[in-house]
Amino acid sequence: MQAERVLPREYRISPGRLAAVYIAVGVGLPTAGLPIWTEEGIPGWGKALGTLLLLALLGRLALAARSCSTSADLKGIRVRGMVKNRRLAWEDIHDLRAVPNPSAGMSQGQPRIISYMYGRDGRRVQLMYVDDNHVAVDREIAALRVAWERHRGEDWSPNAAADRRIDRRSRRESSLLRALSWALMSVLVAVVLFLVLLFTDSDAMSPEWILITPVVIFLVVWIGSSLRDRSR
Image (cartoon, rainbow, N blue to C red; front, side, top):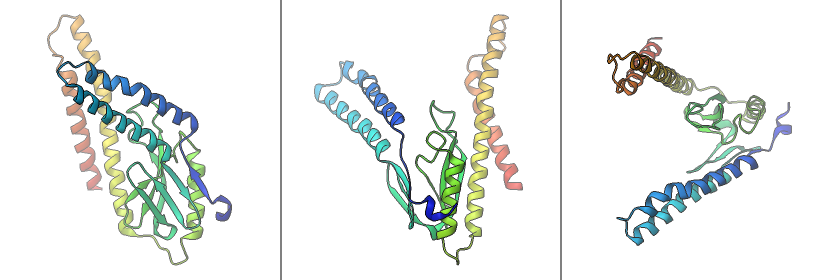
């Protein structure tokens, strides 16, 4: 695969998902605005102001979803994000990676795999829409790496400090994901145990433990994982 054949490249939200964003915004406005519109204690100007703020916020989200993008050309990679734009020349990129999405299980429709480019200082920038909801991630990252290796220059060399920073972040995120997984499983266990005790007329467990248990499990697993990773 030649770099010249894979460039330029551009990634944007798919039409179907953009339509879903518009629908969500349309549904979200009356849902979020109903408490404001029906509250008798809020004056008319307050309701109008609240409605305008909701329109501005939801409209901003819809516009951002449409305008966000990732593009690659002979000069480098440019990412248009919701807040700011970032561009890195090929020689300033330290690495390109596809990684598991930490928020994949938080809401329906989230991608399982997302992608980042890493600067020479180890800081990362998410490649918008280079995820498994929109593209074949492995194929696209491979294509971008071909272009990167071709255009970064012969004097390019890896940065050990950047590698260490990337590895530390990766370990922290792995610890966090592990703790979240255990906490979510503990919620199910706590609910089942509470129901069993409830139907057996036992008061050995109060409902508060359904909330306390996942918090304790999260902290124990997170701290334990973090300490283990630091000792390696």
